[in-house]
Image (tube, rainbow, N blue to C red; front, side, top):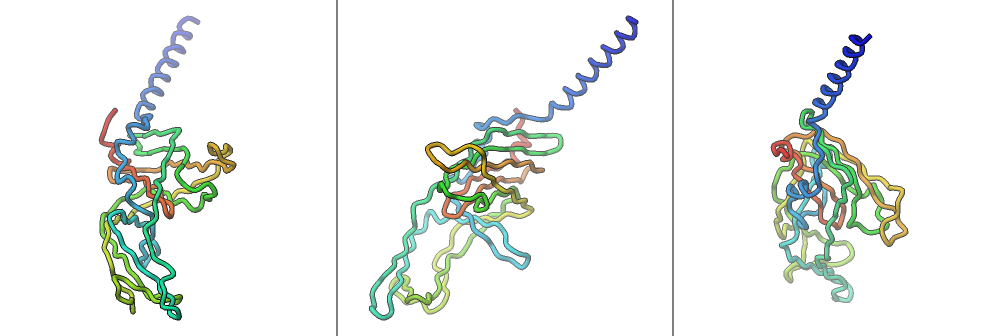
Length: 229
């Protein structure tokens, strides 16, 4: 009986040792560490890059452009609209869990998205993990049916390129959906917007949270793979 008990305890000890060893490759990532891989804060805005196969997520940096156009009433010859670059807010994520499975290269993150307007809907958020390719993007102005467009004092008769801005687009990307949580946002009657992501990554992977009229949150999460605790 004692020999059987000893054998059983030895088996249990080996089982938990093996289980503990198998779990060591899963690393809890502190938010402060993730912030080390946050890039281009308050710079890029979400958009699309059309191509032959559909639309590609594209993020453009308008922060260094000061472009103004005027829309003129043809009948009264008066300006009734002058474009300006509005103030932008940046999205901010508030994670409640971040983990990295190094052996299987699986990145997990969940939490709340803040920085949007109160009545925003989950479907308006654009959340991606993919590979980043830096490029440039043209800003164009075209004639308007509601009035004459003037740029630098000259009437716009056809579509013209008026500036080129830094940009990047994503390849090999996967899209994720936001959803409404159960709790209300602080000082608001609207409920919080949450996300829960589990995705295979490599060293080139970036995580991007986008929303129209907001600066994107961008994290180079692939670099976590080559940096041990």
